Image 1: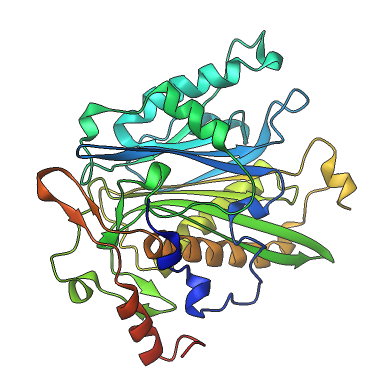
Image 2: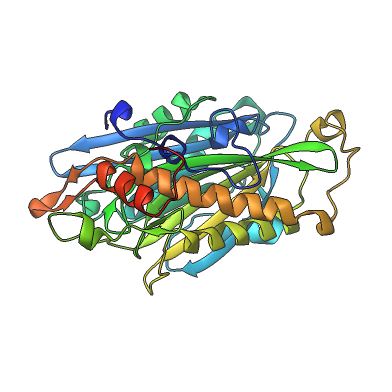
Amino acid sequence: MQDDTSRPRLADLGIGTGPYPRGQHNAITDVAGVRVGHATVTAAEINTGVTAIVPDALSAGCRSVPAGLAVGNGYGKLVGATQITELGEIETPVLLTSTLSAFRVADALLTEVLAQPWHADTTSLNPVVGETNDGFLSHIRQRPITADHVHHALAAAASGPVAEGNVGAGTGTTALGFKGGIGTASRIVTLNDRSVTVGVLVQSNFTGTLRIAGVPMPAAHMLPDPPAETVGNSCMIVVAIDAPFDGRQLNRLARRAIYGMRGVGADFANGSGDYAIAFSTAGNGTEAARGWAGEHPADADLSPLFHATMLAVEEALINSVLRASTAYGPEGRVAHGIPIAIVRQRLRAAGATALE
């Protein structure tokens, strides 16, 4: 894993938040009741892993939470997608991994969830597993992810700060010509006198020309060697919100998350599998305690949350690149971490940063 002290996040570069402030950790875990865990797998020419996003609301008293799905381009293997669309809910944590390991991860996730006492009589369960292709930096055909890795990611899930860059499901990904990985961010919106937190976690692995605060950061000009290739060319986005959205509203929120990719320069190539899953943690009686009186927000009031979601996605994607360090794969392949000194220089030259 990279030295976190040497690689800044977007906020450390003096880039503002737009109209909505960041949460305490600027992470998906700023949404109360959401935890994140990673299992990172590195070996000879292997760079891969698992990332688990765990809604604590899933429990004996709450077998599912409201959820929505948006597909930007369906070139992927999102396990459990059709049931999310059909029923507007998820029944398990959301796990992210490598493309060819998605099915092993789904089976292991089933084992973990069915082992809970409240699922003793369960006969049908919909595991949710997303993926991107880390084949540029890893021997993807080996499918090295095991049930132990899934168990570790779930057991390690915690609130608070979230590790980013070369970690978990982002260990072997590349994005926008640089090393990509896991990124996260959050925004806080005041909606009808209530504070609403929206948090985002991304697994970045797609092409295009990176923009940070609107400033182009072309890998071809910033790296000494040719930019990293992106195999499979995909992005997974997970959005959590603590307002009581229903499945239809969460579908709408997920679509805005996909739109956020364009803000950082995604080119939405033919082979890109771009998916967003959005879920609400407000349930099991908690919405009444927070003043919602069991009602969903009106559609007419959602525009600020749509905007905040897009901003959080953009920042999470940028964080996934900023925090990722150079990684080496099979056959001498290299994905370079973005050169931070040049990023700072370009931002200063464009007047995009408040820092000197």
